[in-house]
Image (cartoon, rainbow, N blue to C red; front, top):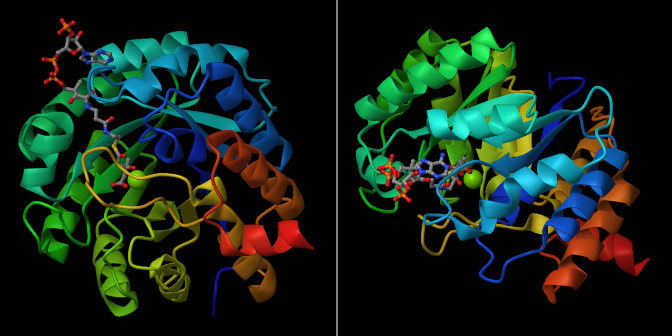
Length: 298
Ligand code: HMG
Ligand code: MG
């Protein structure tokens, strides 16, 4: 039996846009976030307080957080790799901060310039500060199914980082397929292994769609009881430190599937379709959402 309801975390404004070469004005990002909150998302990843030298596109994060209309009950999250990021997120009134590590040593070095062990030590101060200020704490684990630099990643190394993030006090932990290589059975194996370390109700699936497997992997995750999924409106995105990786699974496609399965999301698909067309028009390209394009053409 599948979960009756799921939580969808919309990551388009952060994961979706972070890799865009041309700077997207804060006003456009703000309009996108507002359209998404209007669609009913309870959780929107809106900002990343990271080094602007590493990810220039996210340099406007504070402006976006200051300008958005905050919908009561919606959690606006921000990525915070260290205390400098945490302080910025706190000042910007983020509701949830995200520490992001990796199950792959090689990717950890490329993405955050330190080893897995060093990252956990850094996250410890962020975690303590989050608790002290009453912010939600989320942990994200990249390359849980494969790494662009080291290739295979074992379920044991994922479990190891899950355990460390649990011990830091994370409220929620994301198992991420950064480069979109996972397939359905592998997804179930890794999710079930992670669930031996952390409550399955607070584990999330974050699937990029590089190999077209993301929707199948979400269905496979539903079968083993995962009920939190990340997706990106119009399928925007890619990670600057994972060359060739495409965007997250498109939100419209996920919502279409959930509706068909009778699984509640609390989100209005039509409004998300409009938001997807809005941002795609701004970027000057066709939306990567198959369901979004089909519904927009109706
Ligand atoms: P570093 O160079 O080792 O940091 O970078 P540092 O502490 O030595 O500082 C160097 C400079 O960066 C200093 O500035 C700091 O002030 C500045 P300078 O004195 O040279 O002018 N700095 C910062 N500036 C703004 N905000 C900060 C900050 N921290 C330091 N928070 C660091 C280490 C972690 C900062 C860097 O590697 C970084 O910013 N990495 C972020 C990479 C990133 O954002 N990747 C994409 C997001 S992760 C992702 O997409 C995966 C995910 O979607 C899940 C999945 O799909 O796998 C979540
Ligand atoms: Mg990602």
